[in-house]
Amino acid sequence: MKKKLNVVLTRRLPHAVEIRMSELFHVQIRENDNPMSRNELAAAMAWCDVLVPTITDTIDQSLLAQAGQSLGLIANYGAGFDNIDIQTAQTRNILVTNTPDVNSEDTADMAMCLILAVARRLTEGISQMQSGSWRGWAPTALMGTRLGGKRLGILGMGRIGTAVARRAKVFGMQIHYHNRKRVHRELEQELEATYWESLDQMVSRMDIISINCPHTPSTFHLMNARRLKLIRPETIIVNTSRGEVIDQNALTRMIRNDELAGAGLDVFEKGSEINPRLRELKNVVLLPHIGSATKEGRIEMGEKVLINIKTFEDGHRPPDLILPNMM
Image (tube, rainbow, N blue to C red; front, side, top):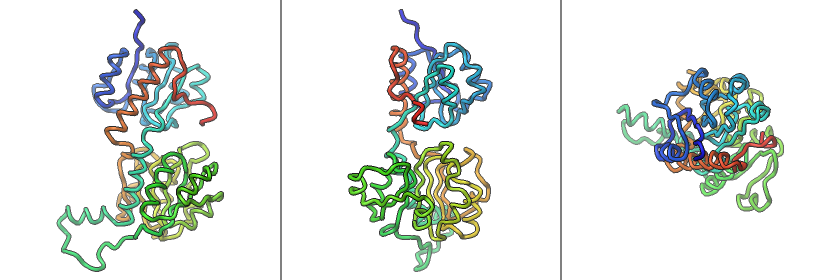
C-alpha cells in the first residue's frame, strides 16, 4: 500500500476540510488556532511532505533553508502568496500553490460594505445606539454621502476589482480604474468604465478609491505619502487587498488633519499591529481581515488545497501552481 503523505496544517481549518484531509493523508492538526512560532514551522518543515500555511505564516529564505528533503509542496491556504519566498522555494525544488478564484465575490461584497459604512457613517450610528447616547432623529444628524453619481476609482481591475465594479455600477456609481493592463473592451463597455493610465491622475479626481491589487514589490506603498496628498479632502479610501499597499502612517496623518473624508480598512500594513491613532478616528471603519470570511468561501479554499495536494501526490502538476511570471 502506498504510504500516505505527511501533511502539516499550520492553523485550524473548517472541520469538513480537516476531516477530508485526514481521510486522504496523514495530517498533523493544531490543537489550538494560534499561529505557529518560527521554531514550530522549522520543525514541521524538517519532516513533512506537504506544508499547508496561511497568510499569517512567513515562509522566508531562512525557514526554507531548514526544510527537509521530503518537503515537496507548500500548499498555501489563501489566494495571496506574498508570505512565501517563491524564488527560494523554486531553487530548492519545492512547489508552491495557492487558492485563487474562490473569494472574489466575498471580498467584493466586503469592499462595498466598507464603502457604504464609511459613506453613510454606519459605525458612528451603531455606536450611538449601543451606548444609549442616541436622542432621536435630527435633520442634520450623521449626514453621510450619497453613492449614486460618485466616481469610484478602482486600483487593480482583476477578478475582485471587476466584481467591485459590477456592484458599484448597480449603485449608480461611475466606474474608473487603473491596472497594469487595460481590460478587454467588452468589459469596459459592460461596466461603462474609464481606464486611467496614470494612477496619479485617477486618484486626484475620484470620490471613492477602492484598493484591489495584490501586494508585490512594485505595489508596496503604491499609495505613499506623495500620492495620498493628490487625493481630494472629500474622498474616501477603502482597502480589502493587502495593507502594505498603503502607507498606514501617512494615511492616518491625513485623516487626522481632515485631508481625507475617511477610510474603510480590512487589512493593515503590519498585520494586527495598527496605529493607535487610526483606531481613535470616527470616520475610519476597521475590520479584522474578514473579506473572505464566509463559510462557503473557506470550505472552497480547503477543497482547492486538497486538489493541489492530491494532484501532487499523483505525480502531476497541481492546478494552482505558482509560476515565475505570476510574481
